[in-house]
Length: 77
Image 1 (cartoon, helix red, strand yellow):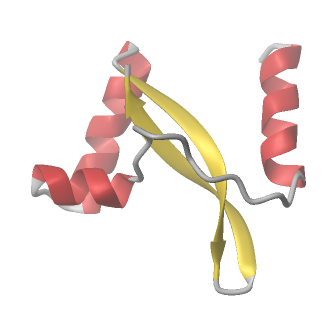
Image 2: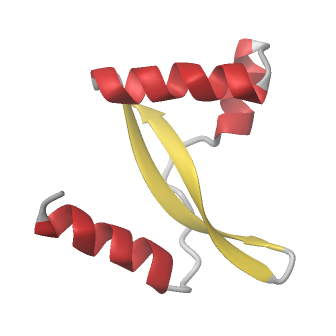
């Protein structure tokens, strides 16, 4: 893991600022609904697409009740 990637991960998990995902980024739940499959199946497909470079993966801070969490969002390249 290079220094840039490490810094990016550090920012994701230590920063509490909520960031709205840009247009075109969707969660695993949205993709599973669009594809008509379970979230587990969508997760497997998304992992394969990310590994092959077809889909971009980014984490965005999302508030869930009182908690702010990094949630993976995906965008087709």
